[in-house]
Structure formats: structure tokens, C-alpha cells
Image (cartoon, rainbow, N blue to C red; front, side, top):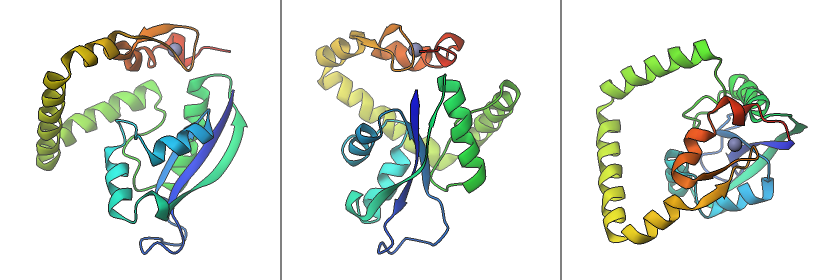
Length: 180
Ligand SMILES: [Zn+2]
């Protein structure tokens, strides 16, 4: 599968532009779709990026730079490549690693738990987030339940999963190592 690795950065006339500084690096199989999604809907795991862009000129003041287009047989291969770019450029708005070996993953989880326990601000943020989600859920119960139980095609492999199980499925070895 062809993947596009991109750098989401402020345009040169944006006051927060800094020469040589990297902001957010991501990868996608459908670059045009991702570009649109960044401008409209945001992935749930990118709230910090979304807030940051909105507070710094909005989407019009930001652009995409293509770092590389390359073929990868599995999702795990593509995440390894993404991690290579993260290690190389150390972008300031990526909160997660793209790829961890199993040992790195354990170490990372340990550190994350520690950081979580210590991060008071983060705790407040999560509580707010939970409260908002709960409010939203109560107001839209039927619709939310319908959406959660909808069967969707996995974008990496040949399986179908409900929205609520998709994230967990995408971490399985079957999905990560699936060859199209
Ligand atoms: Zn899958």
C-alpha cells in the first residue's frame, strides 16, 4: 500500500513559524482525505494539535509538506517508517510514538502511567472530556448506540468490526501484519 508521510506545519507568514522546526508528523493511505479531515473533523487522538492550530491562525495559516511517499506491505511497516521520521525531526505536537517494539512499548506504558498520575492538568482535562462525552451520550443515546454498533470495514485488513471494537482490533497482530 502506498503511504504518504506528511509534516503539518505553520505557513511561513504565520507568526509561529520557525525555520527548521517540526510540528506534527503523520502518515495516511489517502492523503487528500486526511488533508480534508485535518481541516474539518479531527481525529479523536489529536485534540492538542486541533487546539494548537485553532489558536495559531486556524487551518488557513497551516499547510502540509509531503515528506515521503512510499510503499509498505503492512500497517506495522508504515508505522515503523513514521517512527523514523519522528525520531529524526522530533516534532513538538506529536504526543505519541508511531511504533514501539514490544520492549519499548512496555517502558513507554510505564512512563505514561507515571506521567498520568503526576499530571494534574491532564487529569482535569480528562475529567472535563469525560463529562462532555457523558453529556453528549445522554443527549444522543440512540444515535450513539446505533453508530457504535455499525459494522465497518477495517482500513488495514479484510475484517469488519463495530466502531467500538475497531481501535482495539487495529492493535492486533492479525491487522498490523495483514498483507493486502
Ligand atoms: Zn484490521
